[in-house]
Length: 86
Image (tube, rainbow, N blue to C red; front, side, top):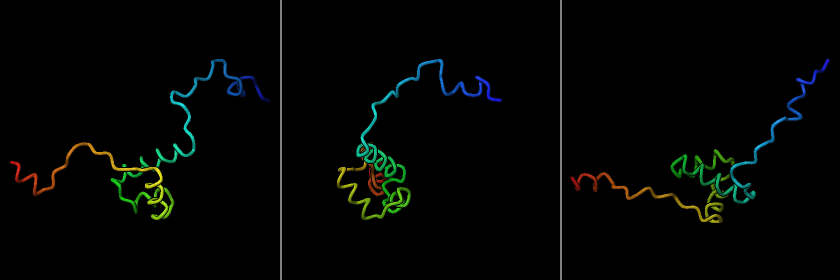
């Protein structure tokens, strides 16, 4: 026997909150996701392509299409530069 409590989730008593961020277009969602994956793998394109399940050629095309670039968190010194500054 089905009780009212069993199907309460179909008729919520409280209003459903709207998403905090506006919904993205498919193109923008793809751009954001590709950028995120690239950053998570330190821009290792072979790893990123594998995670995204696309070829490296397709990944390079998307990088160009969306004009993606690594985010710079400040100047990084090479080991040689680092040892010469101290």
